Image (cartoon, rainbow, N blue to C red; front, side, top):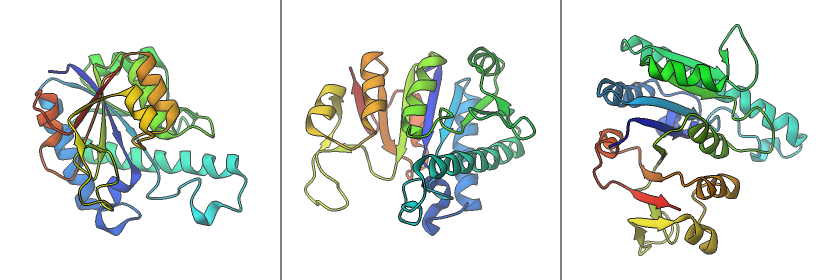
Amino acid sequence: MYKRIVLKLSGEALAGARGFGLDAEKVAAITAELAEVHALGVEVGVVVGGGNIFRGVAEQAQQMDRVSADNMGMLATVINAIALQDALEQRGVKCRVMSAVFMNQLAEPYIRRRAERHLEKGRVVIFAAGIGNPFFSTDTAASLRAMEIKADVLLKATKVEGIYDADPVLVKDAVKYDQITYMEILRQGLKIMDLTAVSLCKDNNLPLIVFNMNQPGNIRRVVMGEKVGSLVTA
């Protein structure tokens, strides 16, 4: 169904039940699914967050300067990216980490054409450090990178089944949307991604699929075109 994808992973997804740090079993499970999708011939890009290590707007960072806090958050995404890279390479999948903040000893600098070339050569590309600027979330980075490398779809991994009209964790009778438009998300104020990311996707007609990452095999199901999660279109 999709030849080239960008997967947005939160840092919390790598922490598992612990809620912080890196859970080796969870990282192994995620990379196993990525390796399976990669084996199908799909070109895979990943944008990873850093909330499991440091969240720039977390309570403990409220007394910090926002720019300093967000810079620390960007560094946290690099740690997660290197962990994913190592786990993928242990499975025999060639992988490159590209950072929006230059740190040549740890990762390649992000260059769009080089990223596309890596994908064409069958390498998984992990985009780290957001877009390299404070005040922008990794959701925005995922939207931007997906459009820059001309991805067919942006996949957002969450801990619920898709998009609901209310928080399904708090509201038992929340209604799930199988399909919804970006304009409806903006109109209803649904907190799926930040407004900048939603607007970028809407303006550039990039489809988004929000799905449950905790259900094994869901990435493959999405790529194969099965109706999983919620589809968002312009």
